[in-house]
Image (cartoon, rainbow, N blue to C red; front, side):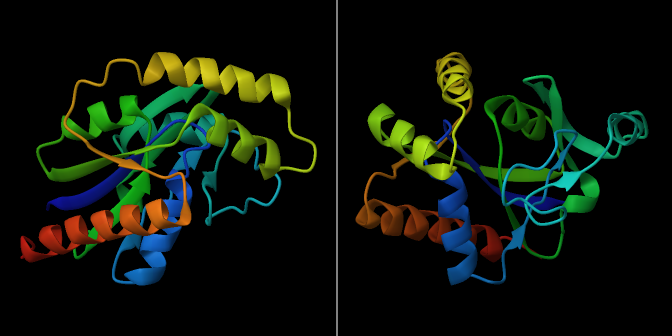
Amino acid sequence: MSYKILALIGEAGSGKDTVMQETLKRNPKLHEIISFTTRPPREGEADGVNYHFVSGDTFTWKILNNEMLEATCFNEWFYGTGYESLRSDCVNIGVFNPEGIDSLMAHKDIEIVVFYVRASDKERMLRQLNREKDPDVHEICRRFHTDWVDFADLDFHYNEVWNETKEDLDYCVKCVEAASHRLEDRMG
């Protein structure tokens, strides 16, 4: 069995989730990958929609039983993609971190196209500050520093797209859609 994945990466506040949601609206044939995490839901998040929120024991069990394609620890919480989150009969789309991309690329049964969604530091900061009623400024700063390290030296091929304006968002979605059509053409 093989899988086709459109993977979106980007620093916090770059709009990678927005790009994914807009792409899904325009192309309902795509399958959204719902990752697993051990962290509690944030304000407005729902189990099975944003993530599969599981206990540490359940996450560990999935890893030990080879049910996870990739897994990582971030800020003392675990995140990962389970095989059950993918479909082989259509193109899958999801948001990942660079470490997750490295893990996915190690699987011979996965064809992956990566889009690095970018935005200026100012725009990213404003988005994160406006995301919640009472944002944790220290957490936002921590994410900025972590992203600076994690995205400093990407060693895999990616397509870079900027997401500052509504026009940028539209262009990002068109680029991701075009890649999804190319992957669909290679299915079967």
